[in-house]
Amino acid sequence: MALFTMAALGFSAINIYQSNNTARQIANNDLPVISALIELRTSLLTQEGFARKYAILHDPAFIELFRQREAESLATINLLERTGSGQDYTSLKRHYQEYHTAAQQLFDGSSTETSQLRSSALQLLGEVDANYMKRKDMLQTVLSRANEQQNSTIWWTVAISCTGFLLAIGVAPFVTYRTFGAIRKLQSATHRIAAGDFDYDPQIPVGDEISDLARDFTRMAARLKVLEQMSLDASPLTRLPGNFAIERVLEDRLNDGAPFAFCYADLDNFKPYGDHYGYAKGSDLIRITGDLIYAAVKEHGGPQGFVGHVGGDDFVMVIPTEKIAPVCQTIIERFDNEVVRHYTPQDLKAGGIAGSDRYGVQRFFPVTTISIAVIICGKDQYSSAVDIARAAAKVKDSAKEIPGSNYLVGSPRKIA
Image (cartoon, helix red, strand yellow):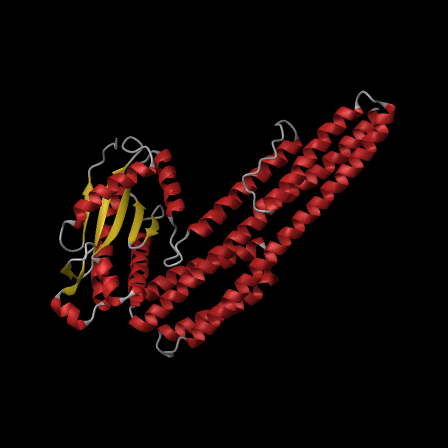
């Protein structure tokens, strides 16, 4: 009884330990690489947008924004080299260098065409996508190998335990049932997570090595779910985080307890602008506004600064309270300098455009401005993201009544 029971337990423990190492490898290596490739692709798309805007507007601010994203991309490539085989990313670095050269030629004036930059960008994005798919295939291979190992473990555990069962009916069934049941749950969890069911819980009792592996699987699934939701939630126009990420950041800041500033930015007279100049021009103005806000928060908002796109012409910022003035003033100054580029000389001379309001009444609308509502938040003032949004909406209404671009700081208070 002792011999066969210990053999079954020892064989199961060895294979479970190997499975546990596989899960830790996925959580500590494969997931960061996949996440880094997603971030690199997003950063490259943003860089290309800045380069194109510079080719049209010749505004040095877009070069600075391009450099900021370029630094992020280089840091991501360095992370990929540290977490994977160096030779895997040689081609990626070479394509990125070609892309960097094409962008530099555009910025220093030696080339005025964006076709070379676009061609390099497409090759680079293709290389990123190829590495992403390769890493996904590697992850699937690891999961398949783990599945085969689990099946083998089940078979041999049952075989050894059954041999011991013939010698000790009273002990072997209990050991086999416990081990077999836990491994089957882990096998089911592997398939469910691989199929996209990130909320699945194998429900393995706490107290043994298998429960540690189950917790690793649960944490891995939770991280995958967050990454998928953030990727789907991002605005396709500005590539800024959407409502899911905004709510998550606000809840985290409230739980932290430290005071922070919530800023709600809205464009005044934007609808008449879009009706007058068309959807494409309106989308371009929103995209550029998002870039301006992001750049201002990165420049003055500190490492804790956050920018989100609620939708349409509405943006939010979460920044330290002492950064309110520099961030808001920078946004207002840069927006007022930029928005005049999007009106015709005739409309600028007239001071605005004529159009219909939301009630169908013809009236004159001044040049689009930006209003920023600011409230100071803390756990003792607001209990949820909904309360913060409700309070900011009231302050925004007051800010929009003030002519021109401005920001207004509201008083913190509880919302009933």
